[in-house]
Image 1: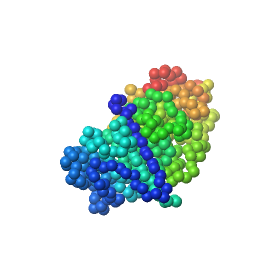
Image 2: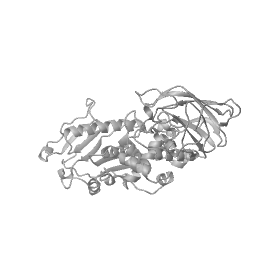
Image 3: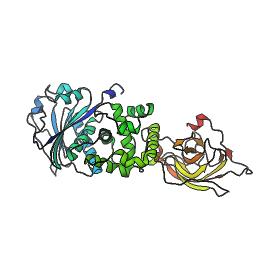
Image 4: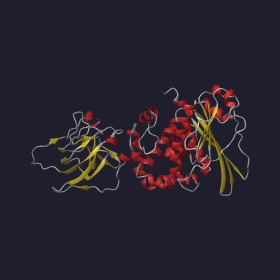
Length: 447
């Protein structure tokens, strides 16, 4: 997989022609192009009916229609049908997200093997991208005051989600006349590539996840304020996707993210700093936390940090009660802990770490899964994890805010179920029983 991925590039070219009605000439191997701005109302499903009989003489080149796409391709009929279904699903999601219907057909050239195409089939820039294993979206924008007309054409290799990625650029170009700043444009195009209806989990390519986990994190400032250009590298696309995925799916930031994006697309005077400046510390922390724990199946919405609760120092024997869900990440106890104090934890109830798995107490199973564990945050810095359980006394590695969760893989918590009633209180020095966990080995804390 690593042999092909670095060749994966996408680019969007936008040409603004103020008051000029000059279409961008796009050579076609099928002769005169036939354009349909809307699909027939009776055409419910993608059609694999050939549009131009000339393609038969050329071997494998055919045209395929769906309600929002016209695809010229050398794919087989079955492959084209599958592609059109994926494109239609994608366009439904992105047009619903941005609140603007796709009113104009998106024309795509999808290439499986360049050897099947005439040498003059593509513009030079498109051919360069196709030969590199990627894609290019060329958009002509004609403006007249506040009005515009736009026509986008996609050129993409047939594999690795490139047609979906480029089709997002085409949709934005035709619907808004722009795709926004590079970090947003490319990040959201990758989102469109990966989006599945009613699925908020991470499903990026394995090599993308591995690259992010093993690399020095790129800062937010490097992503949103750089002079990087579209089509630069798949590594830069990975960081842009990660930031957009976090901001879109995290409930702490989602309400501001969509208006920010629409501001970009409608050319308002908005910026990342204006929208999120007051939340800079929280976003920076959650962004790095996401990168460090990224894996397939990770749910940003379930692992979001709750910044609203107020924490307090425990006094006397009263203690603090909190409900802890098995299907969430770190959850606040509202307790300010001191590294010089000893605490007691009591947890009642059962939960499971598998949809069909056995119910467990806060002590978890023999492998340690399902155990109640803790971490302390101080000035947006986390301590090592440490074990708690159904009934234990414990000390903490540093002073700060105590958070707890059910131990499970970060990409596996979505199918967990159950809630525990947890009580944290100061330990009674004269009390007997309970297990001390004041000494936690590095191996245990990293499980």
